[in-house]
Length: 51
Image (cartoon, rainbow, N blue to C red; front, side):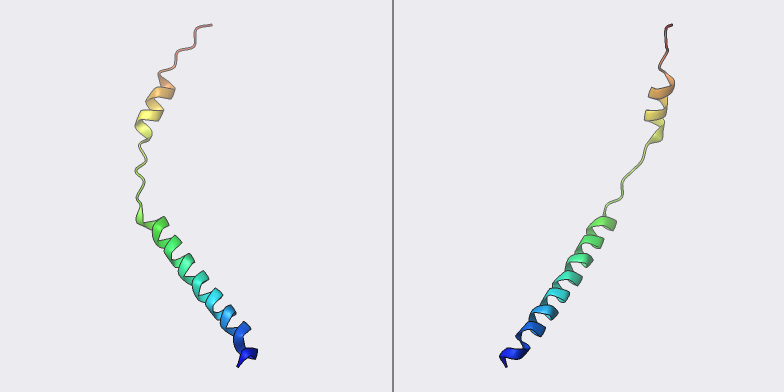
């Protein structure tokens, strides 16, 4: 039936949107970024201002 074609497009759009969001969340949570505050803190503390 050609009248049901818009419903098919909407269901395809929703399914691709769900798959896209799922892949994005997997990519976001798959990386573990290591935060090393010691280097940045030492470099900030070691600045000596000469007035």
